[in-house]
Image 1 (cartoon, one colour):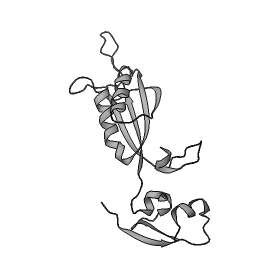
Image 2: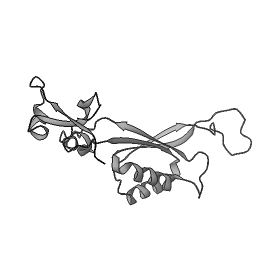
Image 3: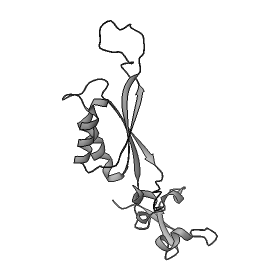
Image 4: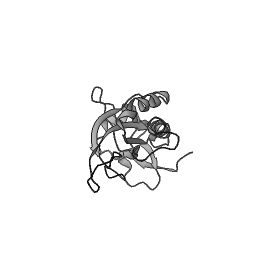
Amino acid sequence: MPYLTRQVKISPALDLSPLAGRLFSSGRASFPAGNVSWCRYFSRETTRGTVSSMKLIVAIIQPHKLESVKAALTDVQVFRLTIMDCQGFGRQHGKSEIQGTPEGIANLRRKVQLQIAVNEEFVEPTIQGIIEGGRSGETGEMGDGKIFVLPLDDCVRIRTGERGSDAI
């Protein structure tokens, strides 16, 4: 779907030397219409009339589901992720299904947190992969986890200095 764009004249006072040759060979660039903070959309996609969008997907899952989630993510071509052990509780308030546990005590439950940076076209496949691998049974159970999708303003590959969606 084409975006509405407007032409913006680049001021000679701006130091855009790292980007100038690659992005602004004509001295003009297209940015989304009505977008006041256009500076954060500097990328190759911007000059073609589209805005590159990156997301950070944070998923909290049960530890025993980690291998099945990794397999499901591999099936949808998502190979880069960060895994952290964490503790917490949600709606179940840390209650165990074991009899004899005192009521009203909130116990922290062991969970695993996944962080996955993806480009826009991988958001839905990644979410579906996490759901497929992390859900208990056909309909799921309380405590299966949560998925959070956050905007990601920038990404920098330390080795090469690449920025934006190319660095993911």
